[in-house]
Structure formats: C-alpha cells, structure tokens
Image (cartoon, rainbow, N blue to C red):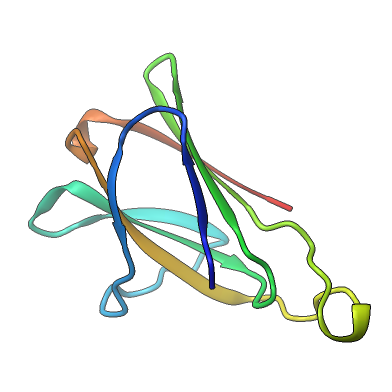
Length: 108
C-alpha cells in the first residue's frame, strides 16, 4: 500500500508501519503507543486496491486525522471489489499525544 500524507497542521515528524501493534475492531481508530508519548497508532478498514490519503489538520485545538480511500479501478477497469482490509500506521508528532484532542474521519 502507498499512503499519501498531507500535514497541514505541521504536527507530524515521523511515520512507520508496525505489524506488532494489535488491530482494533472499528472502521477507523487510534490508540496510544506504550512508552512513546509522542506517537499513536492510526488504523482503518479500507480497500486493497486503493492508495489512501491521510490529511492532518488542526483547528480550534482539535487535530483531525482524515483518511480518504477513494474508489480506484481494479482489474480490467472494474470497480475495486476488495473491502475490509486492515491498514495501520504509527504516527509520531512534535507534541505528546496527550496534548491533542483528536478527531477521526474516514471517507471515500
């Protein structure tokens, strides 16, 4: 999977995958990373043939993490049939996660 990231808030200083982090049962979620106060795990259910975009913005003290999946064509020009694929990334910010009010959004 390719992930396009736009950080309009200027909060992000690192991103990585971490297969050892358990996946939570929700369409989009976040959780703290033990012993890493500046990091969180962002997970979502998406499509296998989409290249998602993550947009990070901050307004009025609320940091919004928005994942846009889009609908990409699959094989032979048909719409992507695969849904329900778990994606997750670890995001590291320039402030502790406890200092942020986080809002999530997942959309096509």
